[in-house]
Every structure is written in C-alpha cells, then in structure tokens.
Image (cartoon, rainbow, N blue to C red; front, side):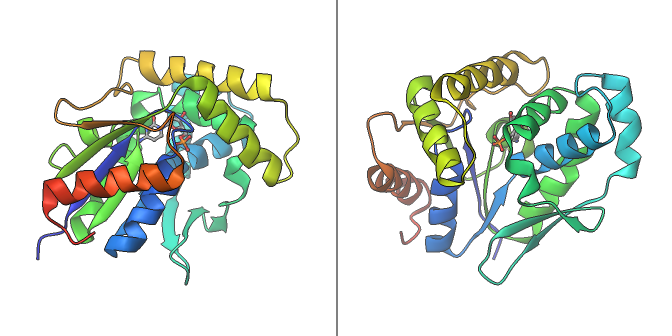
Amino acid sequence: MKPVSIAIDGPSGAGKSTLARMTAKKLGYIYVDTGALYRTVGLFVLRRGVGTKDREGVAALLPEIRIEMAYDGAGVQRMLLNGEDVTDLIRTPEVSMAASDVSAIPAVRAFLLDTQRDMAKKHSVIMDGRDIGTVVLPQAQVKIFLTASAAERARRRWRELREKGIDTDYESVLRDIELRDRNDSSRDIAPLRPAPDAVMCDTTEHDLEASFGMICDIIRERTGDGL
Ligand code: DC
C-alpha cells in the first residue's frame, strides 16, 4: 500500500509535536519532527563558533554534518549528529534561536530536504514543521495548520521548560516566541504559511484532549482512516 503523509505546520509552541506524536501512535505511523533537523544543524554551527546568520560560513560547514534520525524502542525519535546522540542537547533556548537562524539559509533547507522526503517515501508519516505542506510534501493527503495565540504558546513553552528544570521567566519566553515567529514568517525561503489546501486549527482555547479530537476529526474526514 502506498504510504500516507500527514503534514502539520504552524508556529513554535502551538502543540504540533505533542499532538503529532499522539496521532502517529494512534494511527501506527512514524512521527517525524523536522524542527529537530534544523536544531541539530544549529547546534553544530554554535559548537564551531560560526555565526548562525552567516550564510557562507554555515553553508561551508554542511559537508561536515551527517545527521541520522533513529527511533528507539518506545518510538521516540533520536537525533544523531556525526554519530553522537544529541537528542537532549538540542532543546535549549540557545539552540532554538540558532535553529531559527540557520533555517533561513537556503543551503541548509536544501541540505535537509531529501532526508525529510526519504522518510515519507518509505513510511506512512505524520511530519511536523513549518513548510511540510507547502514545500516538503505538497502531495500530503492531509495538511493541518496548527496555531494558538503567542501569549498562550509562550505560557505552554514556559511551563514545559520549568518542568524540565530549565529556569527562565515568562517574559523572555514570550519575546523568544515572537522573535522566532517573525524570523520564521518573514524569511524569503519557505516561510511559515499555510498551504492553500491546509485545514486551519486554532488551539488557543482548547486543551490537549480537545485539540487531539479536532485533529482526529480532520484526518478522519480527509482519509476515512479509522481514528
Ligand atoms: O519546531 P521547532 O521549534 O523545533 O523548530 C526549530 C526551528 O526550525 C524553527 O524556528 C523554524 C525551523 N524549522 C523550519 O524552518 N522548517 C521546518 N520544517 C521545521 C523547523
């Protein structure tokens, strides 16, 4: 049977990864977190001391980067950077900002495109990111654009960071989110924007369970899949 692709795009903190993971589990699809690819490139660039906005400098580093996505026994995506497991190291605010910067560089996007498309060729996937429905998998059977207000997204992200023991204040999380929104939406290449055939899904007023219900409804409507 031909693999099915479901694309979930939207700004940082809208709940894409949690909801995509839940949906993938229910459908038996593979969840692909594409932000982790940009984060891994961001981490490498930071480590090498090259400016994350330096287009030529970053492009020159790409041949030295080998990224692999592996899945552990629990189906959790692990990121390998030249063989080193960096899954936990790519979740800091510093790497978030570096990922946003390097993701605006065309050479970086081209470098990561095949890795993403290859996953969808081999498996039924739920892929989350910013340009999955518009650029990476324009043929996806289901496209969802997941949003929430910046204030609500910042609140969720702040709580998440605190639970992980990362001490930070709400105001700086909100500033980061707003800055990344601007970066991700205003870049010339593959900017964050809904595909014309995407279904809009705003989770500001909805908790996780209700949001999951909305997503299941959309997928059921579009694919007739047994959710
Ligand atoms: O989803 P995330 O927060 O882990 O993504 C990190 C950064 O990577 C984000 O600021 C934008 C970028 N990104 C992208 O440009 N395209 C994608 N498909 C996924 C992420």
